[in-house]
Length: 124
Length: 118
Image (tube, rainbow over all chains, first blue to last red; front, side, top):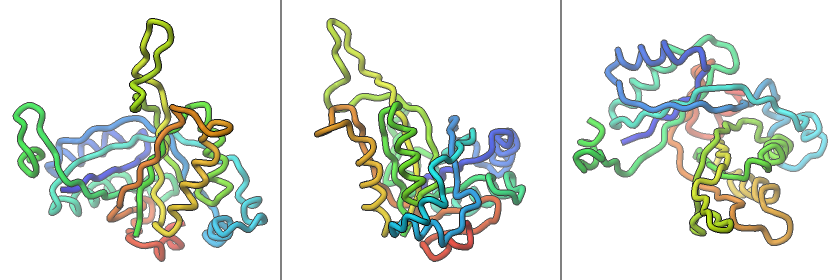
């Protein structure tokens, strides 16, 4: 059982929903979030800042603008993860920075409140 | 290995935490508003008990090697002056198996791929 957390552009929600439904993953929940990414920062500068070089930290500045995003979470079986990820990527990809991120997080159990079913049955 | 860090902090501290994270080299953060209570069962002011206290959740996925530095950075800023106070928040750490960047399609399972995605 895996939790797939995707952070996507707000205006992509409808087509993401459609794509997921077509792929047979109808169940997910979503909420609004705000976020910033790596932006256009140079990875070496980031690494430098983490190691404590003040010059690198100064280059990054202290203001990162937060952009409105949608965060959607789907709990799926292990063998569906690849399909969900591919579906979300295909629906959301414009190729520009800011398209979002997808994280796959392990889950140990799930319970359906209505019937108290556990595990794979609860998310089937 | 990648880990997800979810920090629940006071709404008034968020700007400071975000600035501190940027300075520490962790620009990528997602924030959303949440409401909750802790083991003090909310706040009791006079006769009224508030058990849904507004907080802000900050979500970051980072390399495991940076974990302690990241947590220190958040903790230093999010803690109330002096010894801290109830309600300063919590930080949760959980494993992440994969991270995909949608714009480039890069799949990260380890720190080495980060340079490509940036």
